[in-house]
Image (cartoon, rainbow, N blue to C red):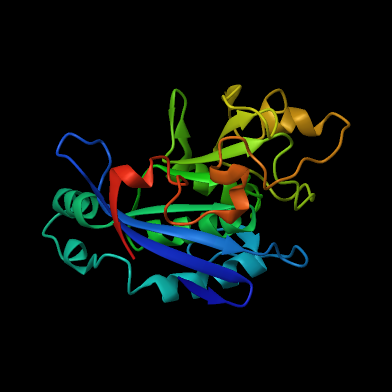
Length: 248
C-alpha cells in the first residue's frame, strides 16, 4: 500500500486457482483518491487533441511511477520479432487490472489509458461510481481502447448507483465506459446496461429527475455495505478474492 498526498495505491498479484479458470494472472491496482478541488482540463500527452483533468493527470503520473515495482516487466514483449509475437507476450506477461471508487475510479481511468500505451494489457476491470475526467476526444479514445461495444463491452465497466458520481458538472467533461446500473443503494440486482452518455438510460436518466443526492459510498452488494472502505480481501475486481491467489 502506498499513499502520497491526495491519492493512494494498493497493488496485488493475482493468479487463477485452476487451469479452467477464465481469470488471467496479473497485477491488480486499486486506487483511492480525493476528487480535485476544482476542474481544469489540460492536454493528455500521446492522445492528440485529448484533454483531461489536470489533477487526475498529475496523480496518474505519480501513481504509475510508484507502481513500477509491482508491474510485470514487459520489456521482453517489446523486443519480440514481430507484432503477433509481441501481442501474445503482452497477453501472457503484461496483464493489469484497475479499480477504484469515486475519485479512485477517476484516477484509475487515466492510469489505464497510460498503461495500455506502454504496453500493458488491461483485463476486465470494474470502476465504481466513476467520475468524468476528460473531454469528448478523451472519451472517444478511451471508448475505442477500453470500452468495447454491446453485447460484449469492456474490458473496463463502470458500476453506477442512482445518479452516479456527479462531479464535475461541466458539459465539457464526457463519460466513456459502459455502465452497469443499479437504481439505488439498496438494489441487489442490476437494472440495465447502458452506453455512456445515453440520456434515456441509467444514471444519465436519473440525473434528469429531481431528488436527494444518494450516499455515494453505500451499496447493498458491497462488503459491509460500504464501497469506500474496501480492502484487498474484498470483491472489487469482479471476482471473490478467495478464488484468486493474491500476494501483496
